[in-house]
Image 1 (cartoon, rainbow, N blue to C red):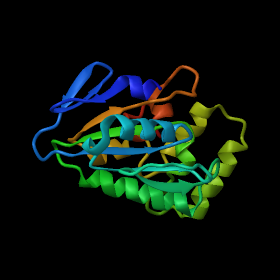
Image 2: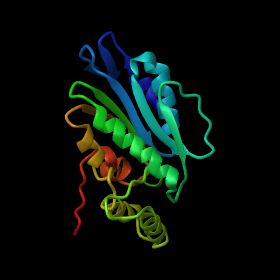
Image 3: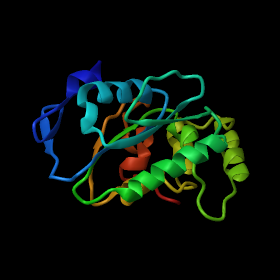
Image 4: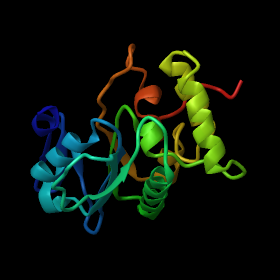
Length: 198
């Protein structure tokens, strides 16, 4: 409901929460996302924007049923990543690298995206990354600390997906399940990282 109330198409582009984002002739509108609350956002975007959406990919939890037509869907697992998490993340990366400077990307990454979209960096195997997730989730650390580690062992987290999208515009539609609403913990692939390796 929040997305339906906040987003609508206009003659020249889209409007989000009262701000209009115009699309230049030939520019594309893409939707990228992953997470436990991503499906209703994607459904609302298709309902509100229709064929204004040119392409998109979202990664949902296995077992979720959907009726998306313009946004392709990958199904993966939560709370631990699986090979499908990598396949979906590779598609997100591919679409992010395909955008042009006049394009707009609507990002809908919500809680659970760390497992659903999991792409280890060069030199780190998928099995090692999955084991890292297991160790972090079993550690008892607060989610902010868990995510600080996970995003430093990722190809797309920690704002790296945003860097691939640059210089196109990004609109983040965010659903928070984290105390304090720290953006790079909630939706970290598409916002700057406030943590450091140290």
